[in-house]
Each structure stands twice: as structure tokens, then as C-alpha cells.
Amino acid sequence: QCGAALKDATFIDVAFGRSPTSVSPDKNNSANSKGIFYSVTSKGQLCCFSLVTLGMETRVDLKVSGSYAISVSDKFVACSCADGIVRLFEPVTLDYITTLPRPHALGWEFLGKESVTVVPAAQSTALYPDTFACRLQCDSNKISVIYSERTHFIWDIK
Image 1 (cartoon, helix red, strand yellow):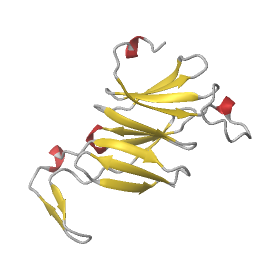
Image 2: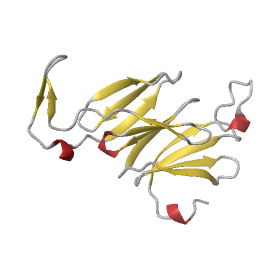
Image 3: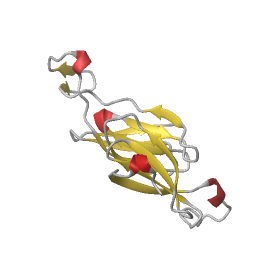
Image 4: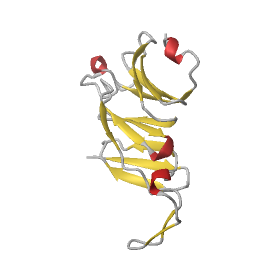
């Protein structure tokens, strides 16, 4: 049961995780029947569902105009969103952890390590590329992010 708020939602991406009850010394227990899965909607909702009840356990408003992808590790749930936003959450509680820095605004041209050229634009109207994909590294120390204008960043999230 998704609830009335998600009745007409379009789910964009899904990823499996582990609930606290599924954690055991057995390392093959990562996506078992006691587990959970996460999904993001096109309108910026992060949802956590139980594989046991198939019901929604919790939901978080990402406070973005749209979301595109999700990645899950033991330490983080990462959500790729519109306007260059990547948000990180704690996987069990979905408590907010942080938002990664945005990439350069559209219209900025990087010519090298020391040189930046800007196409004239008002700073308050800066537009950022959408974040189309993200993937957490298994040890959760790095996240790979791909933006809509074809840039690829690897962020250190220790």
C-alpha cells in the first residue's frame, strides 16, 4: 500500500537494501526475504518498502523538482535529482545526511585546472545540469555521479 500521496506516482528507479532485522553474520543475506527496497519517484519522493509486507515503511520528500536514480550501500542511500542535486540519507531511518556540492552551473566553461571562463549570466538565475545517475562504491567511500551535460564526477564521501 503506497498511500494516497503516491497513488499516481511514477516510480523511476529501485534499489535493494537490508533492514536492521536482516543483518546477520551470514554475508549472503543482503537481499533476502527480510530485506527492504527503495524507490524514487519522478516528482522527488524517496520511498522505503518492506519485502515481507510489500508495504511502504517510510517516505521522504527530497524537496526537488524531480529525481532520476537511486543507489544504496550499508552507509548511504543516494538520490540523483534535478538541478545538480545529489542527496544522501541514512539507510535504516532515511534521516537526511547531506547534499553533495553542485557541479559548475550551465554556461561555465572549464579550460583547465587554473582557468575558468563564464558566459555572462546573472548568478541568481544560474541553471545546473540534472543528475542522471549515481552509484555508491561498495565500501561507501566514493560515489560516481553523471550529469546531463555529460560530466562525470567522483565524490569522496568519507
